[in-house]
Length: 455
Image (cartoon, rainbow, N blue to C red; front, side, top):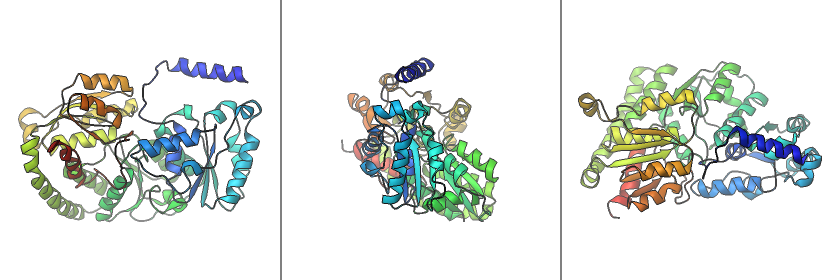
């Protein structure tokens, strides 16, 4: 058995000879746990090696902008804690015991079994064991989240896919209800604030949101996935796989907005794109936009004096996942008048989405600049290896760097400003902060200029 496992590991290495330095995400199990622990009264049960769950949760707590986690989470998550003996003889008996004791001892509305690498490699029939508990009053789901299957984003989608296949039943469509996908807890350090702001904006044009994570809907939110009229994916790719599954199973069309809307211009584009697709009257959309833009541009006017005195045409670089990187770069260039030098996309988006990402970063600038010069076209690089990212930054001139805490040394070495805007972010605390929406751009400028004006 040990020799077989060793061969399997060697095959995995051979299939991807690249060794990453300081990856910008966790494994599939980590992504699954980030979702399960933020579904209200959902109880995760880990079927993995000793320490797997603890490592994932402690990593999120520190590197996810010091955020506490969930209803049952951290060191209190039930785990089968597979050891060498289980590798030899199998861990199915241990898993069966763990599920039983968890249901008996921990009060929850939903139990979700997520397996790790060891269970996946030794071939435990996790799905079969979970099916033995199908008669329980409280649902027990199975998520195939072996770490080697993918990264955080894979695990995020795997939980929603499992719910759609095992829990969600067809429901009558609820007028004005939309599902929200694309915000991965902790991987997006602003995910709570982002979801709140997206909800606020959509409520403004008469829509109701079903976001499942980060609110109190819990299992009912999962069940209502099939009652939505539309699914909105706020990302060029994360959540799209789930949206397609919901479309196939429950006839729910989806709308893909390619970046987090930061500032008035993209927020208005977001509301128009969503409102027109779902059939909201143009007058209602434009009324909401006019109200939001009036306040937002007044705030930009107020902060414009500081921008012009300390940071006119400020050159900047961004290192982040695609949705955040595109949103920040577009706002700072299109509306704040700064100059993008380098945009590094580090979430490894699928090849078929990269063209759209590049399109969103072409011909940037205010309307006058675009009309006269064709706009600004920053250098855009897709890269997931920290060593390569640092090399690109060393060879680029910038004054402000929007990135993870891992890149702060590149800015400090050049005596430039750094602001953590993405995972890992071990040097800031985030609970409600957001750069999404009409006021999000102002918050972004406030955060980095507060460092800049009085260094």
